[in-house]
Length: 253
Image (cartoon, rainbow, N blue to C red; front, side, top):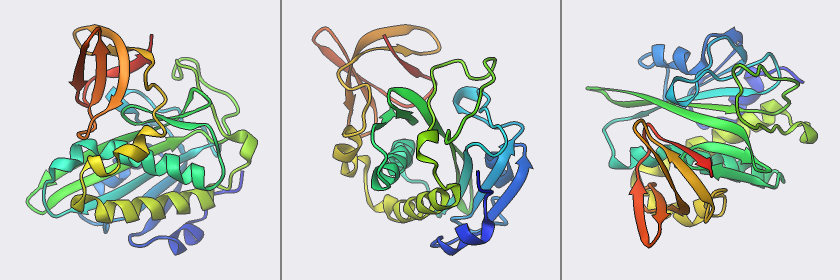
């Protein structure tokens, strides 16, 4: 794969700085430590991560030079109720970016996994800090682009990559960053309901039998998509109940 190029990606940004590392513990962790020194829109990319993170404390497998490990810093001057569904909007931006470059069969698994041909291809981890100066978000994205092999002790579910497309990581990172920055700029003026119809087009578990795993129980039902708050709608018999994003996992039953 062609190496990541800081200057090329920087040219495509609307704002912020680009930092590229050969190896780093975590692109998210780096930006969390630089929250008050880097401008909004700054992105950190790495050829490999030694301690990449996924949701719920899981490790994100990050071999050298095969995939895209990407984090963006974004500042909002004040808290916004819409931020609870931001991960769904970020997933939508990723899915639509792939759609624009001609890659089909991309889907989203609520709330923020990217699927390709029914298998996990990417994930999103949003971390935040709130202080007197506002809300500071670090949006981490991991995408399997050319995964040669896996570590089965880390990767424990069916996975996919996009090796058949021979993607240019610099062009993809630039397109993702540009689209994300556009969306993040306008997001406070919108609610998730404004994105809902577009999100449903990519919902891979819609009207499928699923299992929702919470810290205390497992709930079987039929996924009926998401509502205007970004909550999962789970049908059991004649009852439909919403579930908020949190310490839950969604699986096919």
